[in-house]
Length: 188
Image (cartoon, rainbow, N blue to C red):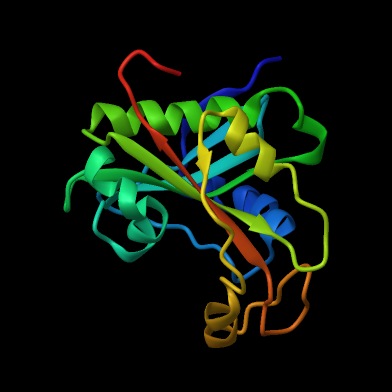
């Protein structure tokens, strides 16, 4: 049976939270609500098989500027909406079936319909470990990689006490690779 991609509901949160905890560790993600929330789940039969946490953010917010940098003026003016893909996770049993691509495409299409002309994400680079599947995934989805940012989660992990699945107790020493994509009508 094929998965249904639909907006994340409050009743999906426990199952989606388990997927996210498994993928990135407790404390390194959070549900967001309100204007601009573009979070979706992939449901197979009755089980949440995937989740993408995304939202519209202004192009001049700090995370967007970190990624967009010199591309900002070409992709989005200050204050224009951009899609920030915060987290994307798929259950082990449902991987390699295109769910991540479908959820990402849904978030991108919704963002484009709401005026976003760019999307960005941070690919987690676990300290001392091989590149995870997310790094080549974003490239295959049409995102362009920027230079790696070392120790990206250090301050946040100390402030929140988040336990990194790779580094253990704070501080987290993982890096990120920023990715950006121009969103265009009819593309996808």
